Length: 205
Image 1 (cartoon, helix red, strand yellow):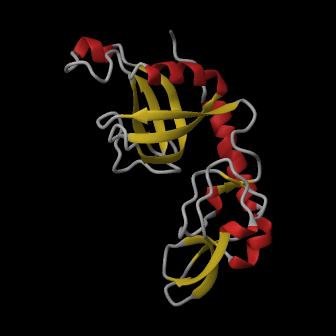
Image 2: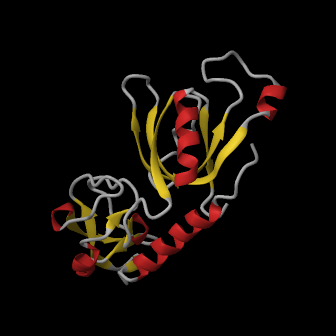
């Protein structure tokens, strides 16, 4: 089955995130001699959930190269949607929230339970971009041959990680991905068969 081009909708999402966050007008890069009050998360906000006043706290920080939302923009942020899983104690940055609901039109959120070896867990986190690959052999099969690897298929060339946590039942990871709705059934079937693997890609890949 040829790989369909699925980038336009996800690219549109990226544009909506940028536009929505620009409306906050609160991104900043702190100078080393500058201290400022910024927004933090007081509790976990799952991806797709609306941010409320109770979710937000403040902290006074200083340093260089830090990006965060100013505390003065608190009322503008309330009502936005968490674009990724927001964890307590995290500094809130504009890229973490979106003006529009997540998932948006034409999108879906799929949940995967991946065993060790099927994803680079050390680098995987909410906000990462990944490629979803269906392996020719299942995760439980012996070492694959070069011919089998040649049959590996890219199901989704680019997906955003919304959340990732440890899976106590398998020792692997539970991962939620934002994908195009048309790709969701195939990804779900491959995940159930144990033939899905994730490859981390760069933001502009």
